[in-house]
Length: 323
Image (cartoon, rainbow, N blue to C red; front, side, top):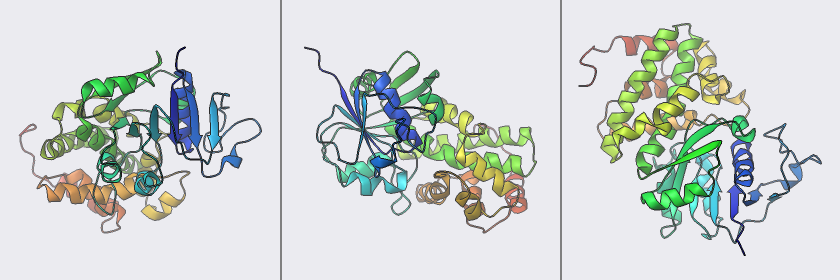
């Protein structure tokens, strides 16, 4: 008798709900953990992702999973440690959040590694808006683990013809790309909010990729990962898509709104707010120059305004592109 795969999704926000829908589409029985299962409407719709009814293959519960073939952690990055500490290590754990823990400067798998030192861990990242994944529109992402064969086996549990999940053995590069894209998206939004133009946005995104390549190398990641789905792919989506919360935050800041006020006006979390200062400190600790990231951190902290931010970047010396 064929075993029906069981996938547990921790976090019933828009991204977690979209992942649950994708897991069901991949033929799994899905347990979607929510703090308030009663929020599921009579039409089986979760409030953070309206318009998408959950099939019967998805069970919404506040009971933590005790058995699964795969566990997807889709809680916000700053809550990952607290949520993770409540879980039983009953399955391979895949971090589906993006960012850096502000208190420690650690990336998702480093946090999970401290909580679950003996568990199989991986990270899922890529250019994916939740509402499009929920709708079953074509998309691609990458699942990374230190063991490439293991990454492929885990990716196969979620892959469908419309959701192409590639395997990687560079979790460091994948996590860095996923974290940094939110920071760069704020910069891109601020550029457009300040009416600096499309040319400026394109140049900023490209120079940010160079920063990330330097930082990835310093952290032990592969530079080429930043040319893939977790790097350029995610940057293109997040820095240009109107559905990006981080881009919208930057847009408001570029138009003169204080960062905290702009963040409070969003529905959901703009992870770049917490990630920018943490990523800046991480780069400093490794002696890597990251002027775009540093400028975003200062802008969000209120240390500079948009005029000074643009002036600081434009006044930098112009050298060889790949030096």
